[in-house]
Length: 330
Image (cartoon, rainbow, N blue to C red; front, side, top):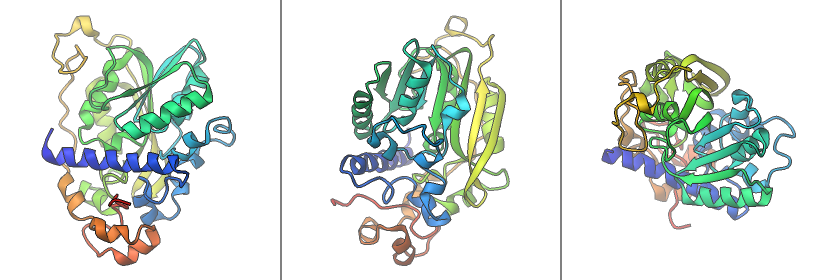
């Protein structure tokens, strides 16, 4: 991992840790949450991110903290079409809303795993599972680029607006393929760019930690999934989150005749025995520029609200205020 990748991962971790702390303190997660960047561009974040994207009544029986911590860009359960008895993995599970909903859908004969790298979110998710009385769930610490589960461990992989945050998307797609059983499927909500929007233009529309600058285009997503061996791939736009950028549903299937661990030499540095294909179709993004063009923490500390930040943050390569509020000891 490069130094610049470490910087971005730490920015993402701290942003979501701050959101978890905000929920735990009862102040909500919107002001300094990961939707702050898009709120500056498109208006109210409830239009494009958060629990408002779930069907009415779907979250009514969940702990309030799980709903408040929902910072995704869609409803992956509506995409994945979960069935009783299935094993589900949620990449970037946050406060646990999609894991708890999945556990309810697959029933006691099924199981739902949540994977997250943020201690604060894992603590919040486990507390939410306890409040919900969910016994068929487990929250695991780790990175989505190196999933700590064995090969062919789950039937379905879901994720809600997290893959765009990774700086190694081929590794994420490879890991999804590895942990799925043959015939397994993915049902993902993510931010996706229109094909004509360049990586540079994506960065102009929002920050990496704001789920915008790191988004793949529709063609890049489809090419990446195909390169890993997925079939029946589709990316469907659902709603606009910034000009040329959309919340989208992503579906794909692992073929029934896909290679298994016994068919391939051991080549992985994690738990995998499967040799991932090489995919070179991703654009190169200078992730260090994202941090350099943000307002300084001292400036952001005095103008946390998105409307105020538009005035007090100087113009730069990013739209004013798109880097969100940073923790400065408050």
